[in-house]
Every structure is written in structure tokens, then in C-alpha cells.
Image (cartoon, rainbow, N blue to C red; front, side, top):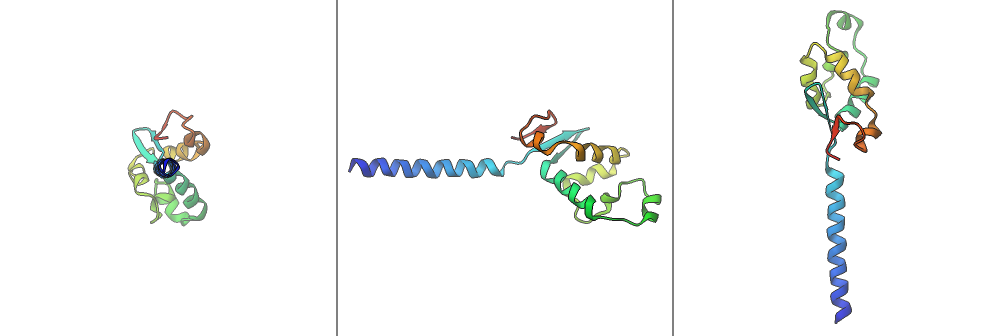
Length: 113
């Protein structure tokens, strides 16, 4: 009987540890920059969108906004940045933040690790 109880406790402990690991994996890392707060995943998506998105040269000449601001798949938390006059420089700064530094919370702008 004693070994069954110990085995039962170990099983419960294993389930609790698994749940904690799963919950930790769902936390998002946020980047706070120039008064904006965006998720690290959104910045990664921004980089991917810019690699695939090519806007017309005429649109680029007429619009001061970065071309990616017109992409329909731009993450919602990045969209307010596009209304700023400094949108190009803010998006550039976000793109250059090292993902590894944010995921490890080495960069002071990153929170939620």
C-alpha cells in the first residue's frame, strides 16, 4: 500500500510540473519602446512580413508610413505605431532588437520572461 501512495503522489507531482511548464511556455515576452508595448512574436512577424511584402514604388513615394503598415496581416499591437510620425524609426528599432536578448530578458525593453 505504501508504494501505491508514493506512486500516486509522484504522478500528481509530475502532472503539476507538466502544467507549470506548459503555462510558462504560453507567457508572452513584451517589448516596451517609445511608449508602445508590443509582443516579441509580433516583432518576429513584422520581420517576416517585411521580407515578403513589396508595395508599389508610387505608394512609397506618396505615403510617409512604412510600407508594412499597409499589410493586412500586420499584428494588431503594431498598428498604433503606424499612426506615429516616427513609425519608420520605431519599427526599425524594434526589428533590430535581438530576439535572443528579449527571450532571455537581457534587454531592458523586454518584459514577461
